[in-house]
Image (cartoon, rainbow, N blue to C red; front, side, top):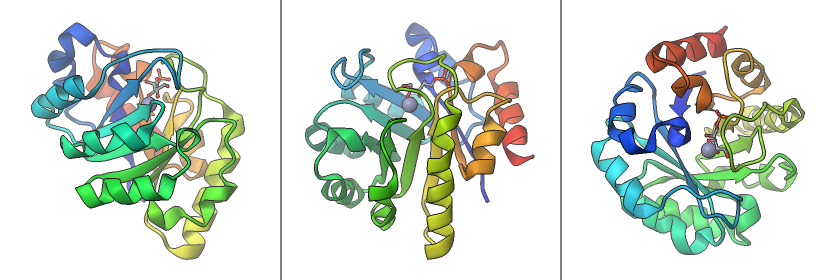
Length: 217
Ligand code: DX5
Ligand code: ZN
């Protein structure tokens, strides 16, 4: 199984974004957290900033929308060239229609589940998505502790994909470091978002390779 590391620029220096993007070139993706201060109690940036990041990043953009009304806003991120656009299941009544729309624009479509959101209703819809993001903290802030109790959802997703042969990335986000990445990999994750464990370091590229090794072992 391929392993992908997606550093979250939520933990980067926002006034030195281009410099910090240049420090993670050995990663597979760059994780871009969009927060609207409604869906989560924190605010980051919107399409204008993501468009600039898209222009200067050598890595594909893995956009994570923690916003209300993704039906209205998510397609714009696909249109500006994001590689993947992930919206929250809790924020839309029409996840399949939105995923189809994102795919029709050319982006990978992702659906994210907060820690308290059950995965069962989505198991039969997995073919509609390119990636499922199992939140391993409550969305909104970096630097929180990994919630082990979310691991059964990954087991269920991996089991279902083994049964159906589906090719859907299983992503985890929150509290991922060299101690927890292996636990998530063991449970079935293949795509790992890491903010503080990558950027709270003088050598982010070393943290990226350490995460990759720990996930594979
Ligand atoms: C939190 C964000 C995460 C965040 C993870 O809601 O979705 O992407 O950056 O940060 P760490 O890795 O520090 O837990
Ligand atoms: Zn995120």
